[in-house]
Image (cartoon, rainbow, N blue to C red):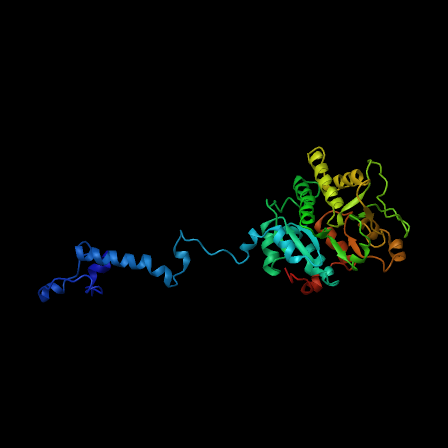
Length: 358
């Protein structure tokens, strides 16, 4: 700036504020030195203008390295509470919940398409286990995702048998208990499921906890709805991936016992625990005081039965309600199996999902 001031005369724009003493014509035409009192006053004035007025006149914020950029449109969801989210999505006192980390977003979308076909999507709440999932879901479907801190490492949470997977699934009963304590009935699903029918007519009666058997042995169509007897490991083999809970003291007791069992059997390298055995122990230890209900196998088959027993599938055709893609590990293998059975919907029907194409 100093070289600019030395090269050409300056017409003082502040002549009223800073009057210059009259001089001879020869003197008035000389350039003003930046080091003169007048030059320093002009330079200081320019700096004040640039520092005070320009930032408010639309100059790009990136020019000011210390200024705070506006938050992203979805960042407000990071303060969204589970209570607020539950109140927003609940319909007739009921919420459908899933817990999702970022790698499982395609499965979430597939699951949502199947739920939308049965008109229950508006009561779905996605418990995001990382901020990428929270922002993605709420960016496309505002209000339907919430993160209960702390966020987890999404790259380890989906690997079955890992400590990350245990940390991910071990949070489930706490989420469900909090929703129950807010006064809502809650249905939990893993997102590697597909709805072929409406499950709610099967939640008949006023039982506390409804669940499904994870065993592949075929049951008679009129099988008992009591908790099955223990297996070889001293406990039943109930699946913890599809549960319906009424907002009762009995359901809350099962969730509290589940949390206790998880604390008593933490993950270690020697014993790669997951949440399901603890859920079964909790069911066993509360069976005498809680009203438990085993859902019909024909409507809620385990993947080890539905995908591997073609004869049974034909015999029970038209009865299937929710299909669980378990008894197989790996994203690619699960997707391939769904594709083989016409249950991978996102490729051709993504627009049916509230999230659209991801």
